Picture 1 (cartoon, rainbow, N blue to C red):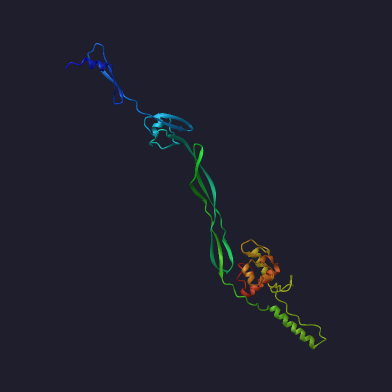
Picture 2 (picture 1 turned 180 degrees about the horizontal axis):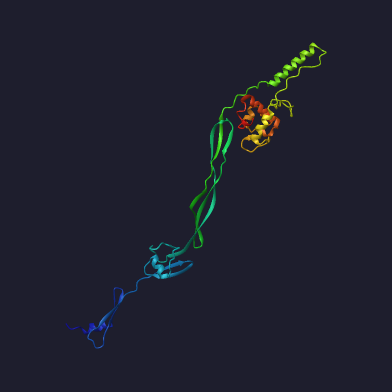
Length: 318
């Protein structure tokens, strides 16, 4: 079928839009019809997105609204320490902002003191109401490691990331007395006292029967260990066995009658407070180390009358 001249003329001069693009008919001089048609596609739509990286901002236009596409368009190369907000792969809307921030962290340590615990242990050898430290408590120590995280130069947070105990604490052990105190008993008169009183009665009888007799029968002298020197402080002082108590004091406290080390035992003979009170040591002082040597020996003789040398760990020195 022959081609219409009018159709050829129209095709040669017309511009036809096809699918949003432009179709251009190109004619060749001398040809009976148009030789070819060149189709130009319509440009894809683009959207503006702001990219802020390391303090610098720029607006780019992207065809695909995604974080990755925005970074490529802005020419941003990510480092291992960078943080991207929103995350890579997240969808965007026109006008959104993608932020790239540098993240850094630093670790540091500090020493922390560990408090020791205290344990009480019943001790049947100590009188009830008294205590004695068997093991002194010692504080421990540990090292804590913290991490400070900084984002774009601002501190984001501090977190504990590790800890190590470098010194274990030592538990304090306190002995608690459970032994019932011995009943208080009145001490029997010493042999020297009985002998002295008998001699006094004999002397008085002899004096009344014979006024011409001026002599009296003297009391027998006590043994050297039992001899009681004249009281140094007043009525009630009993210095019997003074040499023995000096030897025990030398063992217990190296002879220091006013010693107080804070271990619950006081004075030259190392009385604990409960025992001191049970034999009325407070007649002389509230604490044993506050009493004089003579007063401590007097109280020791009271306890000796009840229990012998049993309370003293240095009784072997007697």
